[in-house]
Image (tube, rainbow, N blue to C red):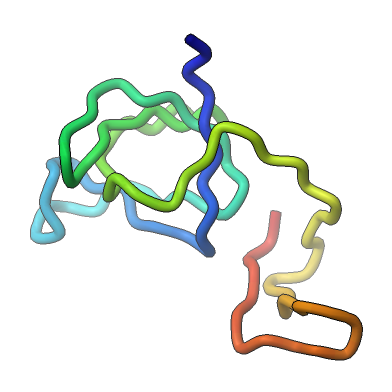
Length: 94
């Protein structure tokens, strides 16, 4: 089984331990690739492929396949559902 996954939400904190009360060690952004090291019902321990951070994120909002069509070059970019149909969401640089 391939162990490469992609994060599918705007961003998430990466925690040192599987708890929101734990220290935040980094963040994972939309489209970032990571490997799952350990998994339970609510949390997964990951290692990010870009900068090799290891920590915990909630066990949600990730997929096996990701086919990006655009790259964000500004600090943040609005997300559109359709042409001229802007949402309240945005993506961060990168």
